[in-house]
Length: 493
View 1 (cartoon, rainbow, N blue to C red):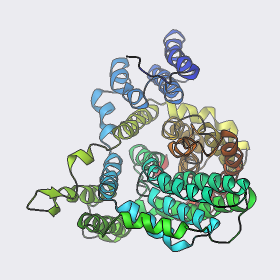
View 2 (tube, helix red, strand yellow):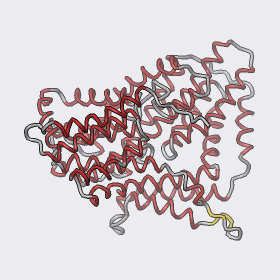
View 3 (cartoon, rainbow, N blue to C red):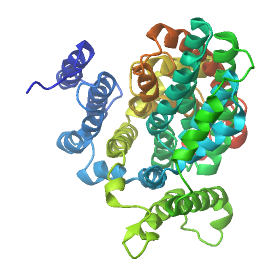
View 4 (cartoon, rainbow, N blue to C red):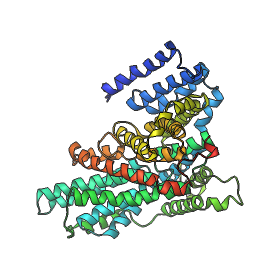
């Protein structure tokens, strides 16, 4: 049997280029002022970065390399290397996904989406708005891939309905493209809203807690991420329904009936849906109120709250006599284990970069950048990540660049949060290419959107979000995290 493969030139180049960097490190002496252990760390970092970016081997497999290479080369002990793979942020992500998977098991996510869409109206622009609001809202809590896969069949049904109407082919095509791009882009944007929305968010939280002992709480991230979602979704909606395409306000005949039929297929609200909904709301409430609760429960963490919510679903029965519970292991096995390993591997690498002295050496090397305005540095680094993630995994890009950006921030006399948070947000802003994110690939796979149409819309949005995130850095991030420009707090030293 022939095994299908998507291995291409990029993968082949990376497969040989990654080990090449490591061999160079073994052959050449370390630069002045850099210890041998830091030099070895640099070689391993280049190997991992190359394989992550080129995806020469599966990303989770690359993420396990520290467990082998660090102890052998004397970079870190096996114990020190393995500890980040069980970092609390991994369990925050795990608990959040348990709730999301249970929500999907009982169909609550679909009911929420259909309810939102039914409320916004049946005109072309109203339908696009409804799909985008529902997608972004769900993507804050459910993976953007699962959200897009759920919304796509409903979106295609609406498009098929429009295709049967009398009207210009130009209008029908534009509506299809705008609706599908709206779903994909809303899924990407929604993930920025919460710590569990996408891997870069979770990784930056774990990085700062591991390297600096600084905790980015769920509430603080939400205070930055949610406004970006609230601004970003209308911005994309305006771009695709006013700038790129334009639609009349009249209703689409039959669209209301179609949405009602989709809602009818869901049937009455199931007991499992009600239980998951209650657990979800209680978990979110605990995350928001944790700063008040820790007065009475000092050991309560965001990760602990997530696991309370996720594990409670295994013991709350839907049908006690039949032994059916709200969550089962068959569903829980669908957890994104690869993503959890990636977070652990990235944290292990970041710990070695810091502990070996490589981060300090990089910081000293980058000190000449002090002559540039901080806002320009943020704009440049964020721009690099926005466009790099068009061809690389956003999670791998974040894991690769975050230690460097933290060192850069210290080198120019700024709080590392001011550089790192915009970078993590920028990693979710890949709007141009089908390969950039799973939502982009999913809607492109429908056959209704061309690469040119996605690239045209995505290029404009890349620049728009680059500007939005930079403005956010000098407003929301400064305020929410209490950052003063030009000041490095003691915890970051």
